[in-house]
Amino acid sequence: MANYYSIVIVLSFGLLFVAPVSAAKTVKTDHPLVTAYAGSSIYSKAVKQYDEYRVFQGWDKQNKKYNTQMLEGKVTKILYKNPPERSLLELYRNYQRALEKEGVTVLYECNQANLECVDGYVGAHLRQQFDIHAIGNKAGRYLFARLDLEEQTAYLVLAVGEQSTDVHVVEMKKMETGKVALNLTALTESLDRQGFVVVEGIYFDTDKTVLKPTSKPALDEVAKLLKQRPELKLYVIGHTDMQGSLAYNMSLSEGRAQAVVTRLVSEYGIAEAQLEGYGVGPLAPVASNSEDGGRAKNRRVVLVQR
Figure 1: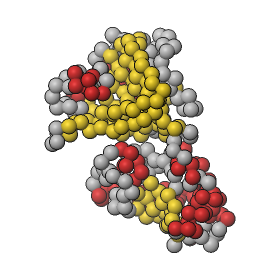
Figure 2: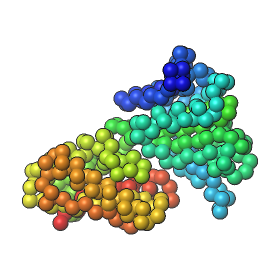
Figure 3: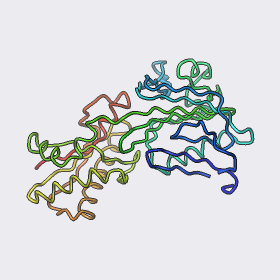
Figure 4: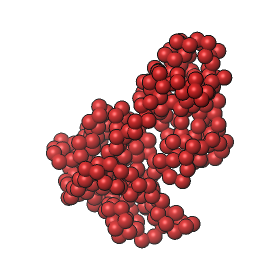
């Protein structure tokens, strides 16, 4: 099968997602970040240079309302007609595997065949509320993911149905605060002034303790600080959001803190005596865990002077 069809997702920031491909030509008017499954055709496309985008993140059965998040940025919405010979599952798995290969953060997924997206009549509601056309009452798979890149964060909404696929992309510039802690001077000043500093730019895949390659610039700066000040001793503290059990998050946060310590010692030659890693899970939030923006702030690595 791998020799017969494929999908290619290209990120203009320098990443390339590749999954199985066909000889069909890529539609030239696809979004520059995401190329459609081969054989798909564009039914409609809308682009707004700056707008709000309300993200669907499931149905709150208890309170009878949608779980949502509001984003702002450049919004592109494309509705594709699926190639008739390809199944819903085949298309979705190709997109999913291509994303997983690059370690993007999947924030929400659902399968309407199991009534995971909404437990009732869904099609018209998703069209009216979120401009999602592909999900039907009894079929459709949905994914919401975040792509963290050097100068930009992009959010991807993917909804694959039996006859069509929605691809929505929201492009956002990273806030300036995302660069501050990568500066050696800022790291030093924050530690000296308040005794701790949040290290922006350290990334892990969801539920994983393995550092992503994009963490290197932040680790480089921390290593510079420790080498310039060999007398400095730090606690490396891992924090998580509130999703999952307390025991799980405590273990996850400690694993991530230890991963940072191990990388600094093994690859940068930092003395073991300078670092100790601990995890406090979700016990010290800095924002609300009720929406993704707050949860993202709570997932962090903090250096504490000891």
